[in-house]
Structure formats: structure tokens, C-alpha cells
Length: 69
Image 1 (cartoon, rainbow, N blue to C red):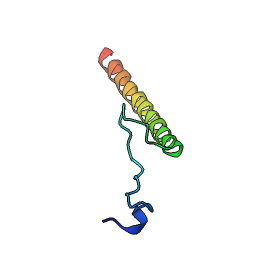
Image 2 (image 1 turned 90 degrees about the vertical axis):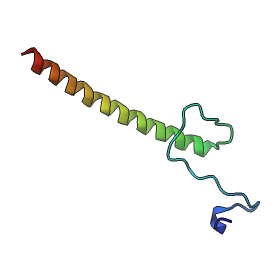
Image 3 (image 1 turned 120 degrees about the horizontal axis):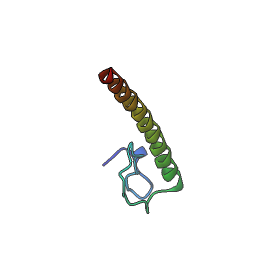
Image 4 (image 1 turned 180 degrees about the vertical axis):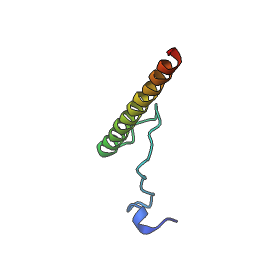
């Protein structure tokens, strides 16, 4: 059995906050706070993806310019 602080009064394990969100995952059992956490996580990931895209685009433009000259 888990540690006492990891269990609720009914003896079931508490849900751990996920470090990732699976696209298409069922959302029915999530609380408002958990949904807010997922939204923040996904927004952070979108920013990270957009930054990576900008870097890739700059690399491609530099390569295009090099090979055109």
C-alpha cells in the first residue's frame, strides 16, 4: 500500500499531476484545476514548437542563400 499522504480518506490513491497530455485523452475525470494545468502545459509546448520552427526556418533560409550564391 502507498504512503498515507498519497491516499485519500477512502483508501484510493490520489491522482498524480501528469507531466504530459495525450491528444484525444478523455477529460471527463479531470477537475477545473487539472484542466487549467493541462492548458498551461499545452500553451508552453506551443511556444516551444513555434520557437523551434523559427530556428528551422532561419537555418533553411541561410542554406538557401548559401547555395544560391
